[in-house]
Each structure stands twice: as structure tokens, then as C-alpha cells.
Amino acid sequence: CLNSSDHNTPFPLSVLLQVGFFPSECVELINDKVPQSVTNSVPKPVSKKHGKLITFLRTFMKSRPTKQKLKQRGILKERVFGCDLGEHLLNSGHDVPQVLKSCTEFIEKHGIVDGIYRLSGIASNIQKLRHEFDSEQIPDLTKDIYIQDIHCVGSLCKLYFRELPNPLLTYQLYEKFSDAVSAATDEERLVKIHDVIQQLPPPHYR
Image (cartoon, rainbow, N blue to C red; front, side, top):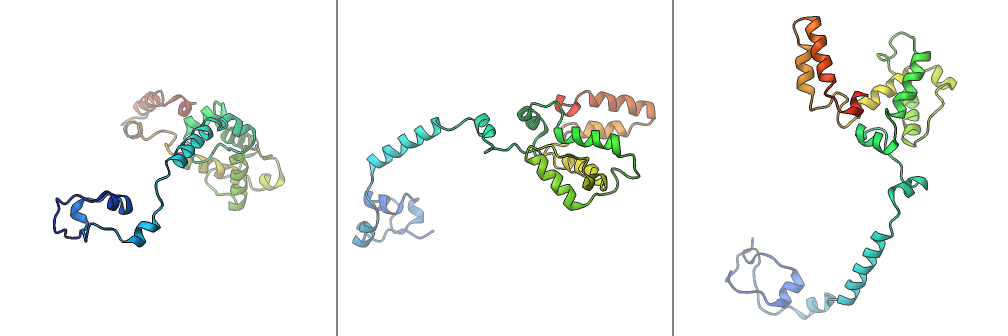
């Protein structure tokens, strides 16, 4: 802060308009007059233009197309990866994400191979699949490129779960799941895990 010779000296209105409002202890008042060059360089208040701008903004906000219309025109795309599970299902109208439905059906039919979820697929194939699902398309997983690299489909499933903002088993229930798997016997562990699963939010439970 700059030292002021008189902290109680009120600023002239012209100073407030030119330099804005600052606490007196942070401004050194040189004199009561603003140089002519500064005065001439600052535009005068334009209340009429301000009023027109407010009117324009109000009209613009009221005339904005709805989210549904933007989606129909292809302007707005709903995220798939990295989107909250409940939000994504609400926007898409599905019970489970299409990406998981398509991938699990494919894996159940073609994925009886060693390490389907352990081994990684080719990165370019994974990113290509991700892009198609993010573009609200359902890729044809029976193409040779995917049949020959089945692990890219398993990797895509893992990628989807990994990027959920709130994990499938949720942060809120983390401690309960941790306690459940630490139970002394298999029977007790099964009962506790079943109990916690019942507490999951509906989208996560499905």
C-alpha cells in the first residue's frame, strides 16, 4: 500500500470515476485534480447504450434454444466418459450406459480368451471406440479391427469406470465396503457386502 498523507480525505468524484474505488490506505492522493490527458482518455457514461445492452441480453437469454433442440440439431453432445453416472443416464434415458451394454454383450460373445480384463488393447483402437461412443454413436464391434483386438473392448470398459467422477461403488460407501471385505469369515463377508450393495444409488446398483 502507498502511504496517504490524509486517510480521511474524501476522494473527488472525478478520481473515483477515473481510477475506480480503492481503500484510502492503498492510494496516495497527489492532488484533487485529475490531469486533462486522463480525463480526455476515459469515455463518458453512456446510460442509453447500457440500457440497450441490458435489453439485448434479456432478449438473447429468452430466445436461447432449449437443450433438447440443441441436441436434435447435433450442436450439443452429451458426454459419456467422465460424466456422472446418474446424470448421464438421466440425459440419455437409458437404464445402463450404452457403452457398457455394447461392450459386455460383445465380451460375453467373443471374449472367452485369456486375460480379457487383465491385458490391454491397442491404444489407438481404444481411443477410436471412445470417440465414437462420446459422439453418441454405437460402433460396430464385429469389425475385424476389434475382433482381432478383443482386449481393446475390455480396456474401454475399464476406462469408463476409471473416469467416473464418483466411482461405481461411490465415495460415500467406501468405508462400508472396506469393512465388509475385511470380515473374518467368507459367510460374514458375503452378508456384509450384500448389505452395502443394497445401499448403492439406483443407477450404480443397476
